[in-house]
Length: 343
Ligand SMILES: C=C1C[C@]23C[C@@]1(O)CC[C@H]2[C@@]12CC[C@H](O)[C@@](C)(C(=O)O1)[C@H]2[C@@H]3C(=O)O
Ligand SMILES: O=C(O)CCC(=O)C(=O)O
Ligand SMILES: [Fe+2]
Image (cartoon, rainbow, N blue to C red; front, side):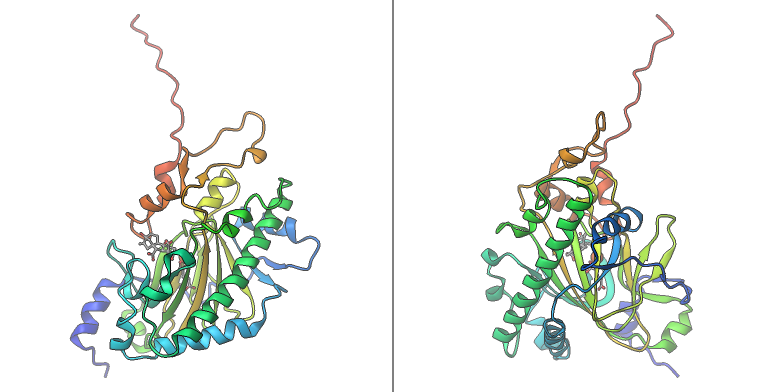
């Protein structure tokens, strides 16, 4: 018999579930080999069709990933009292089930960190144990994935035939780049409970990432799903040796809608913990987020009103996870002035 304790029942009543057929696996995921001379063109196709692709032959040593993963596991294995010392997430720090500050919850605990050294997050977030080792592994990992994100953005610029080729990557390399990094832990959710409700528990609710580009790496536990253009949800088979890249909202705008900011979510697994690490490459706060002028064809108009990353981020952080945050910034279709018949 499954005995649910009262606090668990209360928590679960706040977390969303979804009906999902476990056989819907994304077998057609674009796999980009970074050493392939055709990589530029293939990345563009993937950004247009899915806003999502997998990267192999990326040159990031596997130890950089596994060493940080094992530090993350050590952290998430600490007692609740110890982990809470690194919280609450405001927005940075340790968070448990609550995502953001607008009432979203999921079957997840996490550490959300800024990558901006000026904000000296090392000092404000108390990581119990060998914190020096923890921060040095975070820095090593973040600098490797930032390089990977920049390489992908340079390939995108080349594929779009726009110059200079660092037009996008320079935002992430800027010392004021407003990027962040997240370690997520999705504890297993007993199959029996899942079967009882006949539904899957949501680990991280559906959303798009607001930044420019996100680089996701996870252990060998599934859970990540992406939504196709027609709204179908497909599971992404995990691969701890590769990275998955998301097109984010700001890149959709910079491409004037040529690229798709991918809607994604994570479902809790019944048997195994999922541990993921995500680098969110963001521009400096003052950066204007607008279609790249070198990309616009003659007579092409921007689909969006002008805004800075600071304005977008402020607005995004007031919304719920699943909201279409770009909708507020889309230009309304011009209505023709009414010709008055009663003249
Ligand atoms: C509900 C929220 C959490 C989030 C900020 C927001 O108000 C809407 C966007 C969310 C998101 C999604 C991608 C990243 O995980 C994240 C760090 C981000 O920049 O935007 C989260 C925010 C968060 O967890 O605080
Ligand atoms: O944990 C994952 O695999 C993805 C989480 C995610 O989409 C996010 O943190 O924005
Ligand atoms: Fe995300």
